[in-house]
Image (cartoon, rainbow over all chains, first blue to last red; front, side):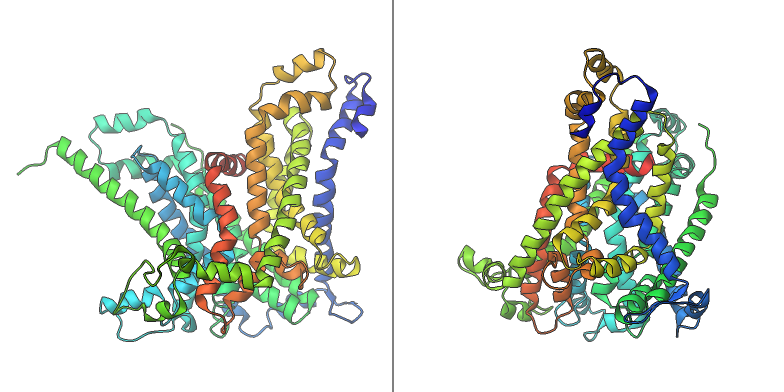
Length: 301
Length: 289
């Protein structure tokens, strides 16, 4: 290989530098051509009236202005943010609960860890398919259980009612992102010194008290990463929505990323689609800063 | 009757075990429902409502009857087989190329104090915050021009770049755990840096390489939106086929579910085989970043 030509003398700093760059070259080429250039390209596109079969025309910030003229866009922005917040909150609450359970050295906690890997590894489409099947109006388990328990008189089509459809997407997304949340939180729980809990035991503190006065304050700084990861995931949600509701009923569950997909690949208005995509990244950055401020504070033990 | 601290502790333990196993059942519930439903015949599924509920299929006599839906998908649906093979053709080269590039790129990042450390970290954050749509719009247009649209290699290139930043980061944190003295000895013996990496570091970093390649395979296999936008018919991956089936009204539900189960088998098996490695890799990749 081309690296072997430089056999003689590897101590010169210049040679070392070229070695470093050669090593990183394949990765840099991939990332440059498939991630960096396209992002710059589509940023430029967002200032053009760029449609299929027409010569692009520079229109300045008009695409960003027309985002706010899309019918029901206010609803989409609101449902995107609500979706991200609800999923993040639920994932953190259940994630912490499971992470604490996993760290108690119970028999079977390794088993739970293995079980959690299943929803993590499952293709999102399959997770969507599973939950779509459970909420199937006539045959699905959910409706049949409710009817058997007498909680529901008749079969209901949950997917075609606005808030139930939203809740279905939330449940499915939480199910999909929960494993990663648990893995990260349980790793950060492991870094808490055991002596703190022993001291709490001597003081006769209850497990609930231990959780709120030791566990929670100490994992808070590392929760920033989890918060940011989750909001990136939820703002970019597409697969599950595509499979479960296709943005419906009406456009009740059309989050911004789905709108971006519609405008780019259904209506073929690439410039506007790109503008919406960048609007989503803007929201992600704002929310990440918000979480950073909220959770990150120096902790001393 | 007063509760002594000891019985209180025991009660708490019982409660915790109850919570642990109920969490396991809640997580497994949709998986089990899906698998058992995929084994039923359409006729049995329609009768299986609240008046006559059974979880496990019971209208079968031989094993081949039980797996009738799977047999149907594999033998009579050419599209399913073709897309399954496409997915393999996409995921395997992606895994190899991405893992090798990550192994190479992460090494200087771990061993030198070059400025790239911060740059890669920023690139990784930046890459994860840009919505996939922003990248896919220009890629779609350029792929049509370069006739990479609807080809296996087009998807391999995109998926490699898509998984690389995270893989590099995981690989770097694995290299960081290997003591520098190990390759110093090799360098003194007259190895070049590349040979030292190949002969000394790579064998020790095998767990990291395993984690990265399994992670890449799972992402490349499961990805939906990239395959949906950059392919049409010829190179459609299996997950996109499953996604199309999900919204089809006229196909039997049991067969759709069976197809979904088939598409999850490779990734679930890999995840369970390498569970410790994957969890460690995920945590290192995210926490160190």
